[in-house]
Image (cartoon, rainbow, N blue to C red; front, side):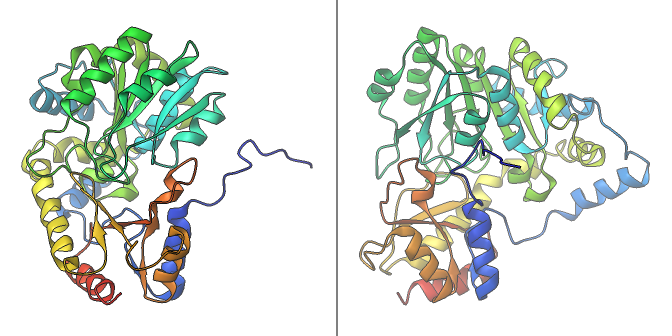
Length: 380
């Protein structure tokens, strides 16, 4: 058959490419965003217990009630916002599915969606697959801040949605209260839906407050906020996330969610519901990862790599401009093959392939792993 691809320009994800290259060449893998340390045995044992108790069939489509209830309680404690667990929380197969379900629910043929680059690689394809038109706006380098005047200039009658991500992947930047106020004004003035990717909500540093859309009543009433248990509990392979939105938006999201995955695995949901009842399991995550960031930065200090500011996530960008003039993708390949440390070239996160000579390294690793990488990087 003669197949016309709906995504002709999309190939294998850069994360899969660099991880395979790391495996093929025996390199330390700081490319893909996953921890190399173990999940808390308490959480593992809870899943096993619920499996043994027979909770192995379909969960309710919106999610296990106990999990939605504990999420609502945590949101109220964290963001001082009351959420109805029955009508405003949907458990999804990871935050990526939450993003796709929301885009599929609200983006119509020809609708424009504003995306800030560098951006996570699922945003653009999800918009296009649902008939939308991604409108890419580059964040200002080197602090990766938003130029709100440019945003205002790009909004028109076709603009349907605006997507934000904080703390930001791949830069580690964090939106400020002023950013959220600007977003609130624009969304209200132009009747926009806001998709807020907040999967690193707990991984934020330097005593900065995570500026969630849930903090702002005007934004919360027109926003879908997405979160990830995989990021919070070092268990990316579980693929469990959730979407929080007012009832009129949640109603539409659940219509698409039920035909994408219907429901998420039951024993993990039940385990998370019990595990989250202990605040210590998630409240100190920022401190934990800030120590890893600082350890990595201290180790690299004095080398030819220059860090950009990182206030959240578990990624640190380094400029290699004083080491090489190679394009970043070529530099990442050489670093992996020749020097045995795998990273991700930041240009792949830009629609226009902007190359600032930056590489992204994941520091969600054991100190032994970071030490081996630091030793190599300091020699360049």
